[in-house]
Amino acid sequence: MTSATKTTRTRTGDDADETTTAKKAGTKTTAAKAAETAPAAKAPAKKAPAKKAPAKKAAPAKAAPAKARKKADSDEEAEDDVDIEAAGGETSAATASKASAEDEDDDEDAPAKPAFSEPLPTGAIVISSSDEDDVPVYSTQITGATADPVKDYLKQIGKVPLLNAAEEVELAMRIEAGLFAEEKLSHMSAAEKSKQLGLDLQWVARDGQRAKSHLLGANLRLVVSLAKRYTGRGMQFLDLIQEGNLGLIRAVEKFDYTKGFKFSTYATWWIRQAITRAMADQARTIRIPVHMVEVINKLARVQRQMLQDLGREPTPEELSRELDMTPEKVVEVQKYGREPISLHTPLGEDGDSEFGDLIEDTEAVVPADAVGFTMLQRQLESLLDSLSEREAGVIRMRFGLGDGQPKTLDQIGDTFGVTRERIRQIESKTMAKLRHPSRSQSLRDYLE
Image: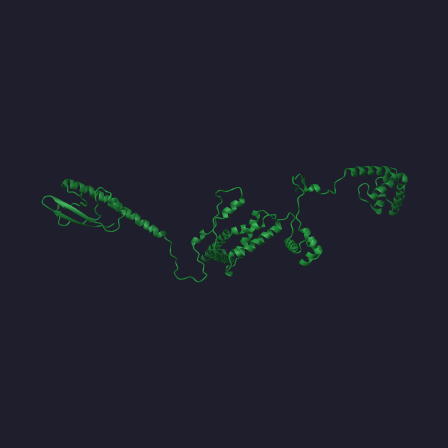
C-alpha cells in the first residue's frame, strides 16, 4: 500500500518536540492490520524528506514515541523503529506479492470465453472438452451392497439423473455425428487417419460413443419398469432386464430426433419387442418357434375374449371361425400351447404325494401276469419236446418263440435246405398234432 505522510516539525528553545501526523490513504490490508498491533506506530514505506530541520535532526527517524523523550533515548528508539519498519515493509511487500499472485490464479481459473463471437447456425453442435465428463460413471463397489443383486442394480442405476427433451436431442445429434464419423473412417486409409481430418473424425466418433453411453445410462430405469410387467412367465427378472437392455441399445442406434418425439416413447417399443422375443425363445422347457408362439398367443387372446362374451368356453369350431383356420388346426395349436408339468409336483394339502404317483405305467409288469407268462413258456417247451426236432424248429422259427422275430417260409426253407412248400406242409402237420385234445387241453387254461 502507498501512504502519503505530512510531517511538521516545530522547534522551541533547546528542546525540540517532534509531532508526526500520518494520513493513510487507500485500502487497509493485512500488512496494515499487523502494523497497527505493533508497539510503535509505523511510518510509511517511503520516507518524506525533512524540511527546515537541523543537520542532526536529519536522521531517518520515521516514527517517534507519542511523548517527548531525551535525545539519546530518542535516537535509540528511532533506530529500533527503523528496523521494525524495515521488517514490516518487507512483510507488506511479500503479502502484496502473494495477493497479486492469487488474483492472477483466480483469473486463470475463470472460464475462458468461446473463441467465436458470431452466432452459430441453427441446429449446430458445440463440442468442447467438457463433454468428456458427461458419461455416467458406474462404481464397481456399491456402498451398502446387499445379497440381492436386483436391489444393488436398481441402486446403481438410480444415481444417474434423468434427461429432458433438449438433452436427449443434443445427445442424439452427437450420436449421429459419431456414426457419420465412423462411416467416413471406415473408408480412410491409415495414412489419411493420421492427418488432422482423420484425427478430428476419430475424436467425433469417440464423442458419439460417450453420448451413446450417457443416453443408455439415463434410460436404464425405463427397462426395469417394462420388465416388471413380464415377470412370472418363465424367465428370471434380471434376465428380462438384460434382454430389455439389448432392445434399448437398438433404440439408441435407431432413434430419429427430427421426428419430435421423446426418446422414451420410441424406446418402449424396442424394449418390449426384445423382451417378448426372448420369452418366446427361452421361456419354455420345450422350445417353440417364434411364429408358432405368436399364433398361440393370438388363440389365447381370442379364447379369453369369447369366454367373456359367451359366458362359457368356446368350441374349436367357434374359434376356427374367428381365427380363419380349421377346427383341427385349432386343436393342434392348443396342444402346442400346453405347458409341461413336473412329475414331482406335490399334490394335496400335506404334499405327501406327487403327480407322478397318479399316472399309470403301461410298461410295468404285474406280478401275477409275470408268473402266468413263465408257466406258459414252460408248458410250451414241454409240448415242443414231444415233437420231432424239425417240427419243433419250424414252429419256433415260424412264430418267433425263441427270439420274438417270426420268420417267413422262404427264410425257414433256406435254413433247413428245403422249399417253402415243404415248410408249409411241415407247419400244417405239426399244428394238427398240437390241436389234439391230449396236447391242447393243458394250454386252454391260459386262454381264459
